[in-house]
Amino acid sequence: MGKTRLEAFSDGVIAILITIMVLELKVPEEGGGPIEDLRHLAPVFLSYLMSFVFVGIYWNNHHHMLHLADRVTGPILWANLHLLFWLSLVPFTTHWLGERHFTPVPTAVYGIVFFLAGVAWLILQRTIISAQGRGSRLREAVGRDVKGKLSAGMYAVAIALAFVNPGVAITIYVLVAALWLIPDRRIERSVRSLH
Image (cartoon, rainbow, N blue to C red; front, side, top):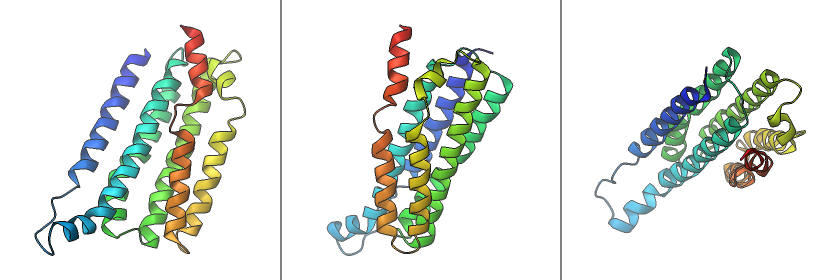
């Protein structure tokens, strides 16, 4: 199977996830005035913004990673579906996090979903590397993948801290996003060398 079909399917799923998330942004009911309405909406909007960035990061890095895959195998398809499964839970956790104003349990569950999406990312990455064999361009690009392992550790710490101080947990989630905001430079260099 060619990569085009996998890329198109993944792009479609991610586009739907972003659409579902934005549909959860409701116009505030009339209450204490426009400023008070917006203040009440702030946690919902902030959780949406954070999730939009996270999903965008996955989409962007997924695109770059697949450039280094020379073929798609059955295990790669399943590993990709595994990643999409965890990402499909993002609209639910985003809505819950915003509606509950960043309380401990929704904050922890939000982190758990992104932690498991990160694990699924690593599985997909390793599956592609395995399919490519010894001369894997992806293996060469990611090396020991310190950034991926560091992200998983940061998520684990943040999930535990969510029960102590949700604000610190959210800050750590944002720091993980900052690590990945720019597409993985190791993969960028490998993609450029192909062209």
